Amino acid sequence: MDRTVPTVEVGINGHRVRMIIDTGSNVTLLTPETASAMHLLIDPTHTSSALGSTGYTKTGNAVIDWMELGSIRLDRLSVPTASLKPDGANPVIGGILGGSILSRFDIDYNQPASELSLYQVKGCLFPEPPWERPYQTLKGSVYQARLRVPVSVDGHTLMALVDTGAEILSVARGSLFQLGLGEGILANDLTRNVTGIGGGTVILPYHRFASIQIGEEVFNGGMAIIQDYPILGASMLIGEEYMKERRLWLSYSSGTMFVQIPSQMKTARPAPN
Image (cartoon, rainbow, N blue to C red; front, side, top):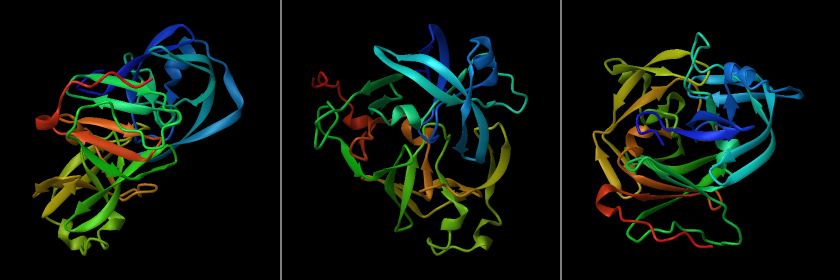
């Protein structure tokens, strides 16, 4: 796994393709260039809407005969095709590995070690990571193949999507009222550029809150992008800035995120059979 941009190499019909790991996307997709280079057939029966940080992208679908994720093989997949840059050119990244595939597993997402492991969890009522304690537990839920967990912002609880495809924390503009804030509070904020799934770039306010709490960690003066587009099923995004120094276990089977902060990180025990 790449630490700068979270990517992983997967097998598609015998070809090796590097894909962005994006738990904030509800779909897995390929770029048109990748689909064309592999001569994938167009799926005439399906189209898809991919949801990213700057909105929806409507796309056609291509048919994958098989996909290999390490030792795991998935057969006969219909996936959307969409450009990842405004000019459609991307010679390195072949697509996005999103929730439609990732939510089938529990995931050990270890950015500090550049490791991604997928676990097929069956028959476990309360699945937990094969780590030595201590670690933090954030009980949430899965919404449209995306994991969301509670986060406290200035003492108010918001639901946040765990989004490996997002750079930093984001708060939906529509949630400001819930936080007791008006639009005028953003007038003097810094701004940041945000590029979305379809290649579009927007300039958004970058606001400093009194405090942001994720699990047991409190970030006094924590900052977040104020996002214009609604975040479907949540009010926030937790991005890579938070994940880069932490190990996460994303349990789609139980709707839970487990977190080890740097001082807690230890070698994992062997995974249970």
